[in-house]
Image (cartoon, rainbow, N blue to C red):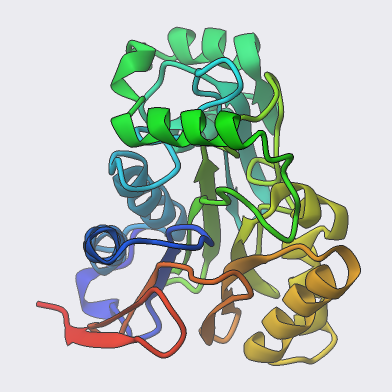
Length: 317
């Protein structure tokens, strides 16, 4: 439900990430910082207008899907055939409703389709052709795949094929994902995660992003989390639910994030990152990859960062 305008309290929180990565050029960093700030501001404004946590994470992630700098929607990395296959999921912490799609093509915003799965079907997860048929039934416009493919993605695939580098978890080539977590004025939590996957992946490969408990999780009684990084590693340790398990055990958001990411690193050499809001409204952005663009909006202040120790803070209008 919507909150009355007079009841907006200061517990509104929205955090976004633009994926764990490495070797981001300086000019690209600036574009990513701007994109991540735009997404966080969009989501936070939805919360301030009384929108739900689910509305806010969907809105924030859609901004990042539409931004060609990020590996989701337009700008998704290419599979072995030079095609785009996208995965996304969303979850409402109030009642554990969830929706996910995988290996979808030719739509602009997989996160919006994931929400439709959550709200308009008795299922949690649709894949491939079935997801695309459902999108058509729901009136989601089909777009030519060329609209999702950028020059940078094409070059990235060529480079990867030349190097013939088998994906090694300790040296991920592109582990970009986008995600958001939010707490709304009713104390409800939600997460959304969306990705194009990993470059040069096999056709039909699905990573952690659409998998509830790996790519994200939300439960009002614990917290909301969205993850990023080496998908296969995240799947194996169930990173999202693992982190929340530590919170259930009485750890702080900061401790829980560190424990879970370090476990994945020591056990599997898997690198990644996460954003997390606990049920008390404490938030954290943590990563073991070289960098992770992130932004957090709370108390009308916006914090952004990409590398360790480069946080910038601005007042929101």
